[in-house]
Amino acid sequence: MPDEPVRGTQETGAPSRTAPPGGTAGDGKGVERTERAADLGLHTLRPRWRTRRIVFIVLASVVLLLIGAGMAYWRLNAGLVKTDNAQTGGDLAPVSAQISGIVTRIDVTDNQYVKSGTVLVELDPTDYRLALDQAKANLAAAEAQVRVAEATLADQENQYRTGVNAARGALAATTPRLPQAQAQVRMDEQTTAAQVAQAQAGVATARANVLAAQTTEETARKTLDRDRQLLTQGAIAQQQVDTDTAAFAGAVAQYRAAQEGLRQAQAALAAAEANREQVVIAQHTVAVNEGQIAQAQAQFQQAQAGDTLVRERAQQLAAAEAQAAATAQAVKTAQVNLDRTLIRSPADGWVTNRTVQIGQTVQPNQPLLSVAIAEHRWIVANIKETQLASVRVGDPARITVDVFRGRVFHGHVLSITAASGSATALLPPDNATGNFVKVVQLVAVRISLDPDSDPNVHVPVGVSAEVTIDTRHRGR
Image (cartoon, rainbow, N blue to C red; front, side, top):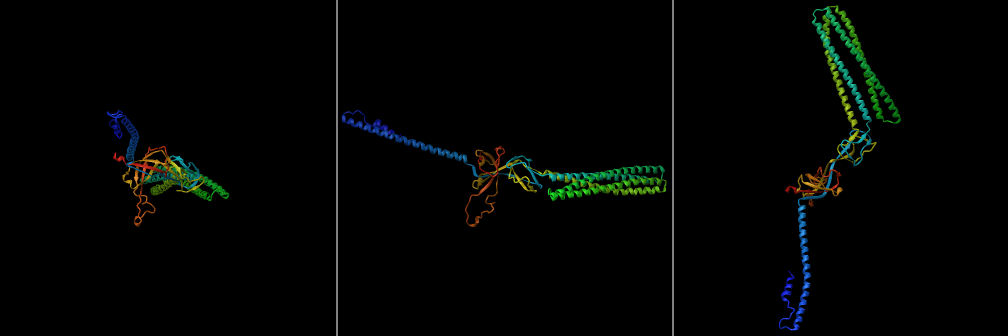
């Protein structure tokens, strides 16, 4: 140590306070002054050496602390790719009208959270409800036509089978016999009675159709008269009057068709009643044995001709069924249009960018608002190309959003874009022009948020974020 020579001087080199043998009293005073000088130098050197030692220790500690901090910082940050050039992203589902109509109600406000299927906007359903009622009425009429066609076909088939069987039976009898002729007459009477009963039922049905069509025509007439009065007052639009005029014309046509059906049914009844007279004629012809075979042959030919009528009735039934199917489809279409007056949310999320207003007339495919889908959130981090070599899909990431300072979100690298921002820019740089300046390019990296990252926090779309990608996990 530095103070050891001083101590050695004091202990061995300094003369004793007692005079050496043979010394004088004057010599003793000189020795005493020498000792005082040595003590004064000793007290001056000691504080200097202590100060230097403390400074040396402090500097060494600071150097060691800086080295340790540097190593710790290197260990903590090596393999981490950081950037503050990041933004949050998400899917925005546009909500638009599928039909035209007037907005009567808006059930949500901006930034409101809604569930999938929640009614957002309501349109006036009056026209579409009337269209649905009209389609249902047309379907009922078409189904009634189908039932009439089925009954007509069944009757024609019955007549055909009965006529064929009767004609074959008559032809089988080579010799006319009175009992057989009488049985044939009774069978004709029963058939004629059935025809008359069916024709009477057809007349009753036709009359009911006429009454129903007449009621519809009167209702349409009253509606048209009322609309014309309202039009003169300016209470309704000309389009409504045109629609009701068309409805009145359709009702008049249905009424006339029903009357024509009644006339046909009455004609069929008259024909059935005329068949009774043929039975009477048949009774008279029974007595004429010679004409029995000729009559049987005529009946057989007539029965064979009935096959053509059966095919015609089958075609009429097929046409009626096709019309019923078309009207049923029209009912479905009208129901779908009525359901579309309630515009619903396509997914869970938050309402944003609402532009629709009450009383506004909207058209199909017109944007009304958007829904920020809750499940679809990600981060787009723009990483320097010099840092991208160590980034891989699946690397964990730590995200902080400027909106939520203090909260940490976790995610994973979802994908790395195949082109830098400059390559996809509207005016990409041309490095072959001679004025090249190297600029570090940025590459977009999409990071998906983990489902359990912080489900109770709504991360807005398009806000700034800071991202730290950990590439060290592959070496552990």
